[in-house]
Length: 160
Image 1: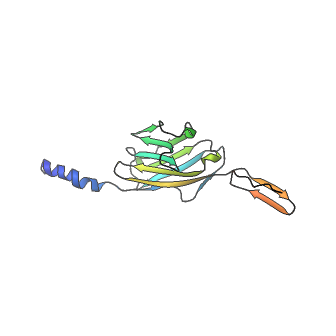
Image 2: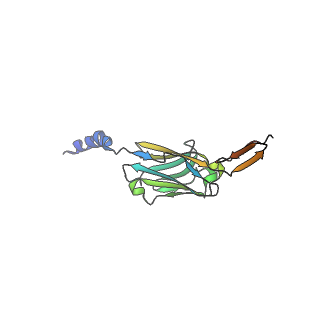
């Protein structure tokens, strides 16, 4: 093989040989109580090494960075202030494409859609996980009426 053939192969054929993957999260919402720690699982299928990938966890919008792993390290420069010191990325199994996000001391404001986004530089894929923060249970009694609010930080209206 000549050097020209090798260069042609690298430029034209090698990019098409890159591994494609899908990102797997949770199918159902993760329900957690205030004050607890939430573990949001995320992994690649097939199981491939993600050490050299960018892994971005964001809430609702791409710019709302909850946790960012890039260039084999964590980046906090653009992390949302409310998540500083409250998130950890479990990367013990990153060599098989598995990373989980821990959000400590969950608050009602943490409810929402979280995206686990893997990027190789030439290919990306994502999974969305819904987090529901369960609130306190409130029960109100009136004549022949009982109202109960569960799994919400919104209380029922009291117009009796």
